Length: 539
Image (cartoon, rainbow, N blue to C red; front, top):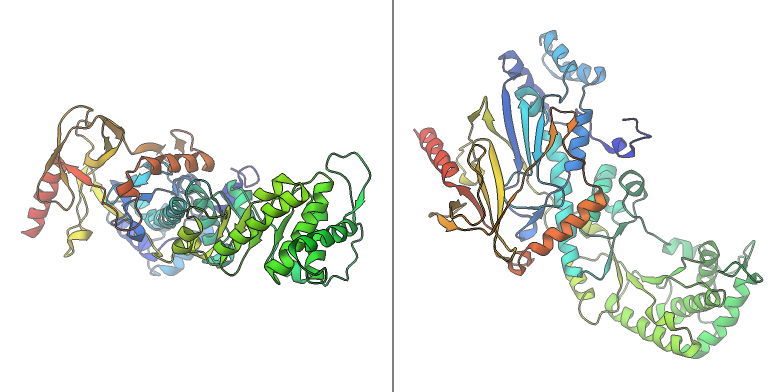
């Protein structure tokens, strides 16, 4: 697709966004005559992030775009030729030039799905050489996206459903690509909007933002607006000199607050007037540039009341320093008394936004019952994931030529599960999640109401479960590379699905500290295959 017709394509990864050993293995496969062997890999993680009991699957949309556009350009092949031994057979590079993903099939969890350790986020099958080359870019596209979505989901759970969450971490992100990914997938995970304009243009993320302290401090109060006149919101009636009206209102406001009319900062007031003239329907005051009580609040109220006379309604205030919870309570009290004093009922419910290095602990404080905070902007804590900077996804070979493959290793946690598999979620009669089960693809699917014996991972004994409902987890998205098997949901649709998924978790599993662990189990046949291959490898 052309970039102008497909703006998301401008954010797509390129084939050489990979590790060199993918190319060296590709040469090894080709030299061994195994480039076309049919193979299957699974992409999964081993432990839930942040000490929680769940993750959200994300990044599928980016993976599909990458696969459909995958093609090594001449410049790519030339660079690989410079990085590989000089005596490499030129025929190998001709093979690379002809590569695409036309033989690749992808099954995956839908974006926004609950994901648990060991359950594939992606299953990728196709010619061995090609699906090996896909390892690093797919990991890059899925791991960080899923980590960010999960982190955002945790923050949303802490904030509750009613607080508006804004992601504003672009300036703190690990580079431009990290910033775009964070803005995209924090929205999927439950944030309401982002400050990142490019995320709005390329990904359709709602964008939000008003003004910074630099705007306020740039005004001294001596500036004269080139056109201070503002027409009524209804479009009928005479224009009013907004700056003059603000000065008249300032006297009344200062009298109400017990302040001298000279106390509020002139430059701050001039900045508010300038902003209100530019955005009369979207005026928001940044209150803490000088003094919230003695300057920011009276200046905001004077401008808001002057706008009110013309039929406009201020959209909010923001705090970026100090005790945000306490200040919000004090500001709400001032708004309530001012609303009564000046006969402006909507003033008492003006939204109060806060920001300033808000982490999970501070967010919990701001979201507590009785808080007057309505909007919370979070930057560093969402985009950098300080509690855990990586999800630790892996991409492991599970079959070649239809034969299962298993990695044993000296570390039991790093053993892989062999064979092409299917995954199902078993539910109780009330819709509660019981466990996820992995089984070999050729096994009959679990049936609702039928007893099933499974082996929970990490347990020494099997257990029996009788699900009331059974949901297949992995859906076919890409077949033979270019064919999209079903339309990809929009980002907004995936966001809504993520919230639905989180609501299905039990409170014990949704708990962010010391949660109950969700069980993932193996079918008896898959467990028997693991035992057999483990015993064979130990000989």
